[in-house]
Image 1 (cartoon, helix red, strand yellow):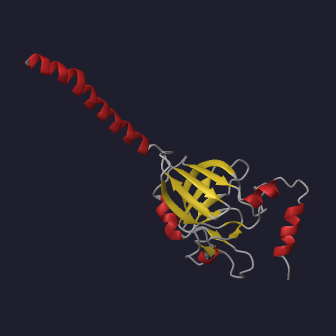
Image 2 (cartoon, rainbow, N blue to C red):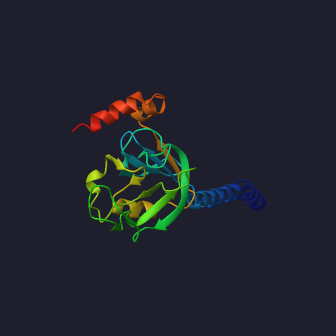
Image 3 (cartoon, helix red, strand yellow):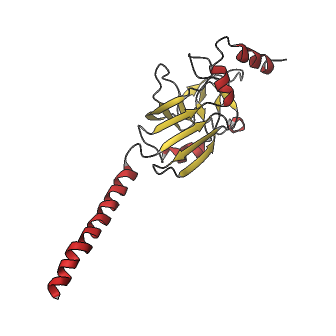
Length: 200
């Protein structure tokens, strides 16, 4: 009778214990790999969402994107690129300077906020996710105002920076209007849009 109990324990209980331990190790490893989370940026609703590897929404932030519609084609077009990218580097930008247009103040220290999450985008080395100058640009969050980068509130950026690593996947989705612009080979739609926003 005792031998029977031992056999039952060996045959049925030990395998389940091993499976449970294996599941725990596997789950722990997945949650700690570099790219187990994914960022999805939606240009339609000016949002940056962070998801877990299970598809759970972890964070949801309002953002600023490029001033102009469409996929980024060249430097200076003020468009936010679209596609699947990854974080190339995480750089301390607290001392970086930038001279904004039309403000007549000259170079501003800390213009990019505390961190710059540089994206690995072919042919466009200067695109990233960054903050604002002393939160002074918070009134532009949720609008089209940047030169192509994704701008966040500094507190949101600090929170996001702790959640991501190098190689974290970043997906940037176009808005419906971006799709129209991208498929408009004659640039008629974009020209009409620019006329409406440049009216005196």
